[in-house]
Length: 116
Length: 109
Image (tube, rainbow over all chains, first blue to last red; front, side, top):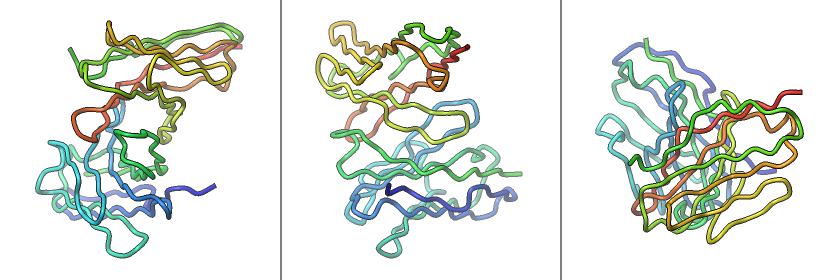
């Protein structure tokens, strides 16, 4: 069964450092997303990406965040200067159709980010 | 009202019981809704979509009440493996999905 894969599974970093989280979405999917989940809290939308550009972003996705699809398979989330409050599980997801239309998002297993 | 609101639980039920969760939403323009399941420290996985009046899949039934702006999830004949957190999901304006905080279900032998 095709799946979304994410690396690393866990990253520990110092406050102020840059972090890049990597994702390989399902190959024939067109929409890509990043969500995050702070421990014990709800899943929160960060950004959606379609046709090589950001289609939507939430208020969480400020100038410290950026996304890129550097080649035909990878989808990355960069946090430029990490803060303590960025500690969370970051989920990448992909879908064949837009999430508001069909709703089935396929999530990766997540990258746990710990900022010290 | 919060965009998507759920009772966090936990709901503790014996095997074989029927259990129901409700979820309220604030955006009256929303057309489609979803229930996702999330196991502890794992990724969410789609359980069911709810587009009009409801949807049934085996032991699971989801219903939508537009007048009162809530959706429900009914699980019949609960199994131990149903123990998880159930996330109610509704669209925001545009293409964003908003997740509720989840309802935790624990099915006991």
